[in-house]
Image (tube, rainbow, N blue to C red; front, side, top):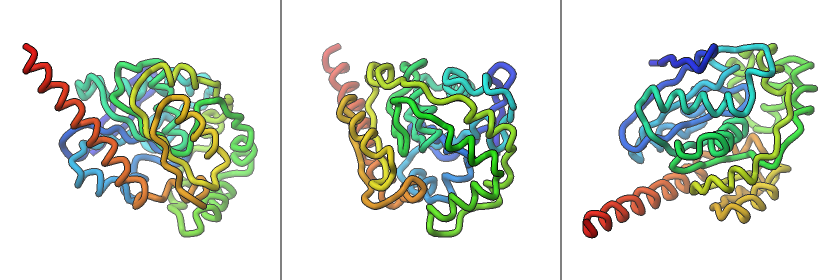
Length: 261
């Protein structure tokens, strides 16, 4: 069941499944929260004891779809995540995002670092990016976009979901290029696990940022941007191990504080 929350004039829809430590899932461009189940992430993360908070990003899915580029600023996207955390009375959470969703996680780190326990980001880097290629593709229509995604995936993709998008909203999503926020993300000081396909053009930039930010990095050899999105069997075990290490570290810190008191 989806729940609504408002961030100023924009309504954000999200759903919650499972119990345990909260893990926010942020999907990529033209997807929605259903992707996490369809791509094989939700079931194993639930089995690992995570409480999944799956958000439809503004401009996507059941959330509001404004047509004004100003409505998709980095701060507004980050504030959507914070609005969901506030609605659930969560002081902070782990956040897993892919591509556009990973970019949104970086934006949370820049503007609201205290609301994060950790970031897991795939297929996105924080050094800034021209979105002109996306603007050109959107000008050709959603069928062209779905063809590109399917060709890169080298397998059938959920065209129904891709074609259900609002082109006007998507054009607004990619109207402005992404700024360089790498320094701010690194300064946030939250633990990070980054991953990318070896055939993704941004792979080496992500590895570079992982070194600069003292983050973990997972390389997925020979996978392109879409294939890495679909690589749940390789990514989820690493995500679970990363989160369990954070759980243990926090439990040990609490035990140490009790002994010292």
